[in-house]
Structures are given as C-alpha cells and as structure tokens.
Image (tube, rainbow, N blue to C red; front, side):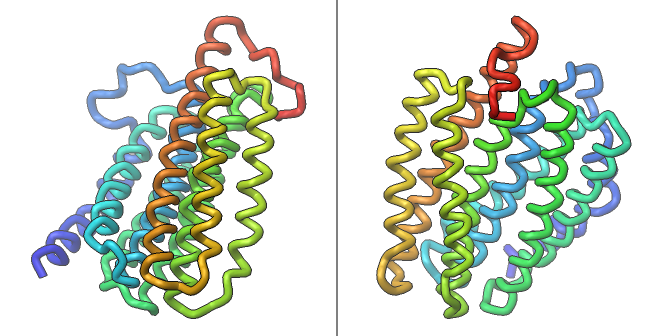
Length: 282
C-alpha cells in the first residue's frame, strides 16, 4: 500500500510543471553547450528502449518471475526517461523538435498512469498499448534529431540505438505472449530486423576494430537471447532466461551505441563530415 501511495504521489507530480520543464531547458543548464547531434540521437533513441524496458518489466511482474528485480528496473527506467527528456530538451531548438518532445512527454505521462495499476493480464495489455505509443513518439523525435545532423552522419547511431529497443521489445512481446497465451508471430519480424541490423553495423565504415570487437560480443549475446526465446513452453525458467539474456544484450548494444556516438562526435568535430558519408549508410 505504501509503495502504491508513493507511486501515486510521484505520478501526480508529473503534470504541467514537469512537461514545461522537459520542453524548456532545465534550470542551471541553460549556459551549458548544446549536446552534439550524435548525443541527441543517442539519448532520444534511448527513450524508445526505456519505454520497452518498463513494459517488459511490468509484464514480468504479472508473470511473477523475479518481480523485485522487475520493479527495480521500472523505477530506474522511469528516472532515466525523465532525465533524458530534460537532456534532449537542450537540443530541441526548433518548433518541430519542441512539438515532438511535447508529444513524447504527454504519451509518457499516460504511460506512467497505466504502469501504476497492479500488474495483471488486462492491465498489462492496456499498458503495452501505451508502450507502443511512447515508442512511436520517441522514434519520431529521434528521426527529427537525426534529420538535423549533417547528411547521413547520425544514421548509424540511430540504427545501433534501435537495437537496444528491439532487445527489450522482443522480451516484452515474449512475456505478453506467455501471459495471454497468444502465439509469438509478432516476434519474428523484430527478430529478423535485429539480425539484419547487426549485419549493417558490422559492415559500417565507422565500425572501428574496438566497435567490431563489441559487435562480436553482441552477436554472442544475441545467440543466447534468441535461444532463450525459442525455449519449449512458457515455463518460469524460460521466462527468467529471456529476462536475463535481454538485459545482457541491452548492455552490450548500449555500449556500442555510445561508441558510435563518441566516434561521430570526434570525427565531425575534428575534420568535418566523416569519410563514410554518402557510402550507403545514410
């Protein structure tokens, strides 16, 4: 009861004041330099992953598989989401970006309300509809930031960042299927997208030897995660394996995305456009 009461207080505070703070530059940060385009694509893209991670963890609680860990993941993801809204607001300098940031914030506000309900089959179904809406709006924001970057330069950051989201979406859909007894047909298209994107990243000219080493780790993590999703029966053991392997894959893809973002920032700042612009990545 105390946890629910505290969550209700937290959500009630997520009103107009929070929305205004997200769209405007946060106090004390107005004098700081605007984030780079790579950073903005990275961190706005992270919003997609965080929304999926909350939805995944919410379903995991309903399945009663490592529920305490799942609650911790929701709390961590909510805080990071709200911090990221403030961060990307520093780079939202056009009316289009401000409008899209507002749309993300409104969708997130509805999502937190859905996540405050006790996790059960029906409430998970409702919350997952909100997950899709938040991801859609965050994806539009990411695309808008990508369009602001020099032609094609931020595409690779977006592709890599989307892999983070897919690691969580696949797990969320698996859990939803286990909870509702549905088939897993929706999973296949995202499984294929993830696999194809790994190949795209591996072939990208910006993929340094260090990045390629991390990509090899990601491929290994993907094999474990994929095997977990193909486990026979929605047993607690299979669900636990999907939960843990999705988190390991997420961590690796997050490291890779940060490496792309940092490489892009260095290359653009040091020598203008990277050499691979126009090479087919864009």
